[in-house]
Image (cartoon, rainbow, N blue to C red; front, side, top):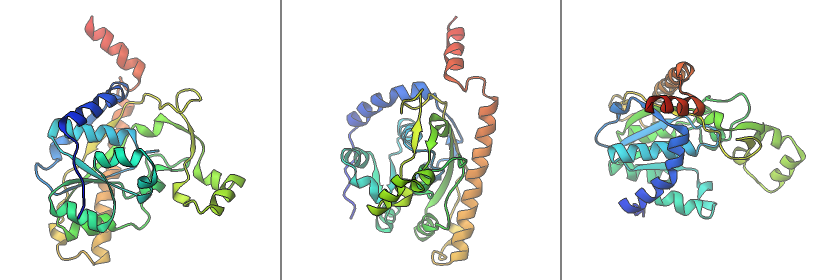
Length: 274
């Protein structure tokens, strides 16, 4: 059985206060929140952005603050080998993405977040911004069907522009450093790219974040087909299409947003106060 004690309201509020500067800098906008079911089990399935930390954290607090939804995030086991991060992440719902854990959460009608692209999608290469790199992964579809869990596809835009890729993982692996990493048995999908944010620093650029929750996808029509690969692929493709459509919508919205930059947002607020 999964052993997880949720943080108290006081602990969540304290952590949220630490993240408040992110909300100010990124000024997130959300679309489709009404699509989120009032009861679980619900599986949020979305795109993993570059490094995939800040936008996922903002979404977590958005769901909790406005809907009192405590979201469990299915994470690669590599996360649990990182001191401090594993304790902090685990405290706020990060759990190992195993079938056993996923099944237990779904049977207990919880809200769960998963990025099928995993580490490979978060540590993407140049030219892969906002691309889903799922390969042939069917795990989330299988778990959802077997546990009759509703899927809510979501799309996120903004975090990809927080950093500029200087040396991506593909380039690193092709270098002498990459040869050394291979000798030490480092997983190819866990090679962290070299990035820069504000100036030459690793501080993320203050990009505006945009989110869209798609219409819930029932798995009832696939009941009893959790071992049927054709059905798994069909469900996966339905979800994938919804996420990609959401990304297109958000990129278009951002293009027309007069307040997409921090400077414009500050200027707009100053004019509004006048």
